[in-house]
Length: 308
Ligand SMILES: [Zn+2]
Image 1: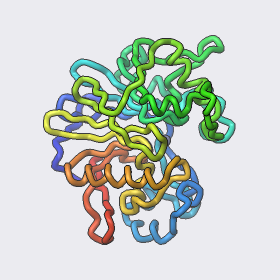
Image 2 (image 1 turned 60 degrees about the vertical axis):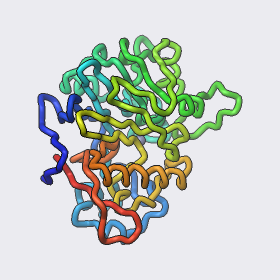
Image 3 (image 1 turned 30 degrees about the vertical axis):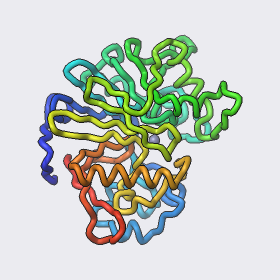
């Protein structure tokens, strides 16, 4: 365990950062894609050079499988309960990915264990609208997809919503996202629970939506500022810890790899320079870290300091 200069204490259900309590709600944790599929530019030397901290926690070299997590972040402020990203969901038809297809997982029970019911959620904030970030937006009720969180406003960026709106004449489908808009996004809009926002939208003066394009055109990072502390919910700006020492490693799911790299580098520099806690969606246990410069590479490169 590495102590950080952030004053983060274990509290009732998670971590306390200033006036916010942060809890993780798990939907999947285990082997993910093969690294050679997930990261097309990846070279085996990269694992080897970082193996003292990457193996076996984050990578299984025998199987060439990355270890991954898919989780939501539950943020409680003095005024509201906010869910950031909503994972894969249950009963979703995802023929392209067996890990996501027709699941039946006790995610709602895990949310309850974190201290919240679906009725308690005031805001759902999605970093982007890929299948593993919107799944629990809806659930199946009498054969119909309905919002899982009946009292919540769902916050999406306008550009991201428009990218995936398959009703638009200029819509470009993506095979990995088939059915996602129809079963996990559109029902929220039709229920009148969606708010489309722009860069800079703020919840409770604590959580700010900031543009972070590249993985998808309307992808955002969400910055938490409280009592002198900062945390960054970075979604898929960074998929895996290997992208700390090698920010140039891009994901096969990045829509625009060059822009994604620029965004990733900016986030990592921001975190390193300002002591910001990084809370990605897909880092395996221990899930969160601080970022420090990596002295062993001349180009911008980083190493993690783990909290948990
Ligand atoms: Zn993702």
